[in-house]
Amino acid sequence: MALAAQFLLRIPQLGSKNINFPSYKHRGNYQPLFLSCNYSTNDNCSSSSSSSSSKNYLELTDDELLRGCEIDTYKSSGPGGQHRNKRESAVRLKHVPTGVIAQPAEDRSQHKNHALALSRLRTLLALKVRSSVTLDAYSPPPQLLQILPPKSTIRSSEVGPQIGPNNPKFALGMQALLDLIFAVEGSVSEAAKLLGLSTGALSRLILSDDSLRMAVNEFRTSKGMKPLK
Amino acid sequence: MTFRRKVYVRFIRSNSIHHTPEKMRVSLTRACRFYTSPITPKPSFFSPRAILNQPFSSSSSSSSHSSTPKPKTPLFLKPPKYSATLSDLKKWHNWAKALASSVRSTFADSDNGPDSSILFRELNWLVEDSLEDPSLIPQLGFQNNSQSVRLRIGLDELYGLWKQRIEKRKPFQYLVGCEHWRDLVLSVEEGVFIPRPETELMVDLVSDVLVRDNDGLRDGFWVDLGTGSGAIAIGIARVLGSKGSIIAVDLNPLAAAVAAFNAQRYGLQDIIEIRQGSWFGKLKDVEGKLSGVVSNPPYIPSDHISGLQAEVGKHEPRLALDGGVDGLDYLLHLCNGTASMLKPGGFFAFETNGEKQCKFLKNYLENDSACSFCNVSIVSDFAGIQRFVTGFRQ
Image 1 (tube, each protein chain N blue to C red):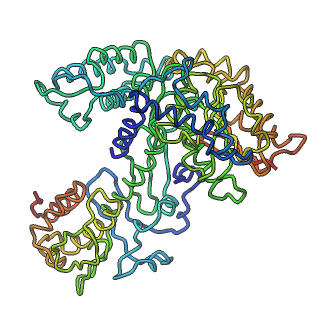
Image 2 (spheres, rainbow over the protein chains, first blue to last red):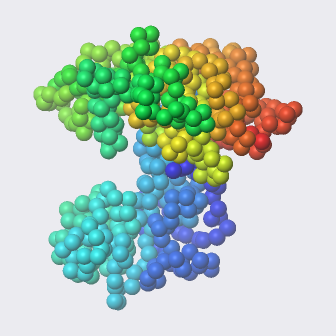
């Protein structure tokens, strides 16, 4: 995987799209970005399968995703290379279309810093970028079905084994689940019904991943509901 | 995590080869297999693997040779034969943290060395490598915990190590005996150059060339000159094709031994051949046949050596750093030698000190009277500094 090289060679190329998104404060309160297909260059939209849902950045390959990113690495003063023995080579990715910034904790190798930044960006995009969901005749996308426990009544055996939070594909399912929870205004019981699960089972799924739990709870709190515990 | 566990399994395997008498025989048989077995077909000179398996390469792969230095085992691979209570470990940790705090920005101000925050990070990594079970690290936060933990190093040695880190400015990598580089964990020790994060990109440059390759570079011979810990050679060995191989050259016998240790730990001893020697000196047999030449040679101008941060200038081998008056001595030697070593279409990549050297070398290579090279380019590192010169043999 020629990850590091891509980081160097790809200059953000999405600037020409002129997509206006709400400004996003990274460390502030939870302000989900709602994406909808109201911008003119809708080539991005055509790829998404069902409903009015928007472009799904998480479906992009690493390479494609990086093309939409500004990459900052720590700019060292001085000549670097053999001169220097100092690990401050953190990588910061800014996803230009959404403004989402990923800066993971530092790993011991530069190569892994890149990979970590990218996977962190995918998680953040799943958490922060919302697509609208039509609740009439709702049918969950396959990525969401994959993260549901097998006891879900709408989950057929063809979906395969349940995907957990450590699987890179979990982010896609998590994103679709959050889209649904936002659509039902934070009601876990209502979302559970649509997913063929008991409220308890869906709560357990939400609580199984820290970032997912925090995103749901932040949203519930903003709606005046009690956080899940 | 998974990766480190995998490494440990590998270690058990390679370590047992070194230490148990029974396995030792296996190892020797294995080393001699290519030279003595009558069943082995006569090597064809044009098959890379066959050349690597010829007798002249034997000195590198076997650790049984008495004059070959024996590399030290990195901390994270040492057996956890020590123990301490969590509260004693905590006591050490508090002491080490206080020592790191006291540094503040004094090193950074004096020679661009590490500040306290970087030292804290290194301290965490030291704990990570010392504990048999790094998942216990969060428990270091609790006082008065009499639970005993298993360590790969004695507590008294940990005090000594951290003292050397702060007082002697000994590089962190020499304390723990390893460096994380790309997805590898490479053994390093005093006397061997610590591979730099900038150089990680060298493997990507080669990998990109191999992806576009239609000249059989993937299955040919490659050479890493001045290999040090073997970092570049190991990185490249893992992206080569099934018939490709790489010769890793270093003048320093200790570096050659460490590179061999690292290559073996990743199971690459049949793909990487270590040769102890100077630059092209021991490569007559592959002249004009190479698919690629890569190197991170010493490139620091001599008069910069005294101003280097102490970790580098006072502890790393000068042989691996000092590139002569303008830092170009070895880079020019490489440029001059590479034309006759590469086969047509062969690739080269050299790391340099930065923009000035890159531009000089690009110009030098493009104006070569024999027009040996084409597509000479400059590639920047992750910090945006022009770092590499690459190109192809016409």
